[in-house]
Image (cartoon, rainbow, N blue to C red; front, side, top):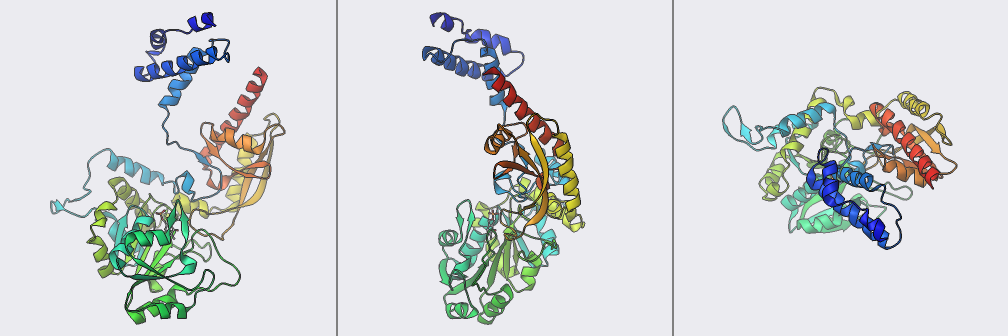
Length: 457
Ligand SMILES: *Cc1c(COP(=O)(O)O)cnc(C)c1O
């Protein structure tokens, strides 16, 4: 044991070995960590050689040089996947982000007048044009939008809302909680499954500041259900002189022809909502943001709210949002990744799946099939919609689907698929054409690595 311990090289020798190739700080840290670990393992009788020490130090250095946030391949078929970062941006949006990010910009500066200007101005004109609203505003995300609307219009007063809409969106965002913390007083009406116009009529009174309707983004109800439509609610609110706020969730700007379930901002306003809010990184397909549109006087009181400063967006968000909205203005929304993936032609998906499956042919033991399945838009949009898709289905006699999935998540690039029974499905709806080759390489590598490790044992 003493002999083995003596064979562990000095830190200075390890540093010398790597000094040309890697930052010294990291070499030193990795060298210390790995030699400490080796010493411990030798003392505990768990190690009988020091041959691989330099290789382990190098592996550690590389780990230390990896970023935590990484690009991954989404093979889940869930287009708006919150865990995987929601909307991927259009390449032109990304290069505009780079342009604005790496220099100064007229973020809060009117170049013509040489005066200060509100930063949200950069996107407001687009939003008015695309939604038909009188006024528009952006904040950090839709949760912030809900908070700002309630705090500005209803602090200390009642907000009437159906019990069927007191929903949890995920990530701990619950409508009743956000309402309480905004200072608004919750006035629930109806029951979980049924709310009628008369329920609202009884509840709306002198203490009512706002009637609110929340879109059920991530679930749907079937059976003995009744809800009051946005249009009906609008007439009721109008007759009582109370504003109506609709949280549409998904941020749909144009009708995608995918059926009912999601309303565009424009439609929501036309049906009579006074204020509408939605996310920037769901169906809108842009960066994380909260978009608020509606009546000028109501939005003006939100603009004057000191919270506006707390919830304000940064220049990267504004750059991303402006360029995304510019694609809509130019009628190029079909190119926006989220919209393209949701409306992808099944034939294209079938061809992509076969291309991936061909690249995976001949891997030892791996059974590869192309199957038809359905993908779900996910993450707060179209909860009942199932889109026909094609998946590459992987099965291996010696590796469980769970194990294969875990190995693929650890590969480069990481690939996240979905497991069904004991197979791993790679849904090509959310895999880019240019990512197919990388996915095939990742699968090949994890199978080969598995083989060589079993050879060693
Ligand atoms: C997603 C969603 C939110 C939260 O939006 P974020 O942009 O994630 O903050 C709020 N309300 C509804 C109805 C949603 O679907």
